[in-house]
Image (tube, rainbow, N blue to C red):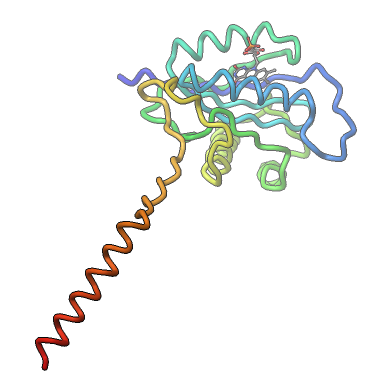
Length: 197
Ligand SMILES: Cc1cc2nc3c(=O)[nH]c(=O)nc-3n(C[C@H](O)[C@H](O)[C@H](O)COP(=O)(O)O)c2cc1C
């Protein structure tokens, strides 16, 4: 059986939302920095949504690492009322390349909530259908782009999603080699002209 688990939980932020014109909350930005620093070496990937004072996080990776992180999360004073909404084994992750995708309170989440007759983001009241739809939305948003912070070289573990690698530029030929090709071409043309006379 696969050792890869998916953990989805909800929690309430304990900090006051900063009035920063709709940008990323400073506290959320710090959480993302920590996640993107730590998760690659733990083989963890996932996505974090923050809206209406609630967190909704989907974590995927080795069971033992999920357990360890969840233990730390329960002690983190930046949120409270942690509630596991789903925990299950999965065959593979859909967050490949994302150590922690951030999904801000965006219009597609508002649309999803409206479709389910909800005015606010309250993950504690999600039924299975809304939970599925929210996780699918996070997966789709993660597929839209690649991780801006790939794991440190040499620290990725087996089974860790590998970030996109830039194709290596084609090696440039040296001037000498290029001149040799030009000379060879001239000789070939000269021989052809001689042969035709
Ligand atoms: C909502 C929320 C989500 C978090 N997600 C992660 C995470 O995915 N990975 C992580 O390492 N820390 C995460 N943290 C932070 C951890 O609780 C903990 O502070 C951190 O792992 C400690 O890392 P450090 O020892 O490198 O400072 C999260 C915290 C909160 C409040």
